[in-house]
Image (tube, rainbow, N blue to C red; front, side, top):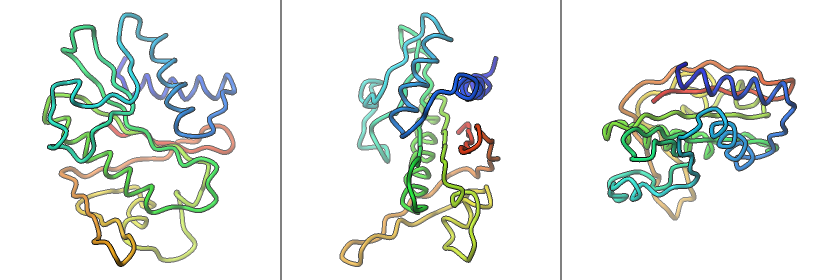
Length: 187
């Protein structure tokens, strides 16, 4: 079974067992517990610093991995990055920017021969579609296609931060129960 299919199987498990996901930590906890059961003998660790893998965190856009999956001798690793804007009234461009930062992080890890997956789950349909025009970041996200550079607009006292992706990413939303939507990207 491919790893992406295992993650999809997790979401089917969540739906059939009526597991309540209420924020990013609940997703991280439930997914890691599920993976430990499905992959006996494999390490599943949360919030690991990349220095644990012997990597220089100064060379990466971020230093913490949401979920690290590895065998005992760390020869094979998979990193899962999560974004779960759940129970948020407003669609936040900063959340999408942080997700793009996660993708760039996974691209950087891929250069180190580390596989990566990004999971985005939300109960806010505003992430899926909009009533009006939006800036490129949310527009592209709603069109299910991310490519190139994106800026994080912050207050005028600070400079804008930007992230540039090496690859292009297309994704499709999947329904989870009546209220949730998610997608999985292999970086």
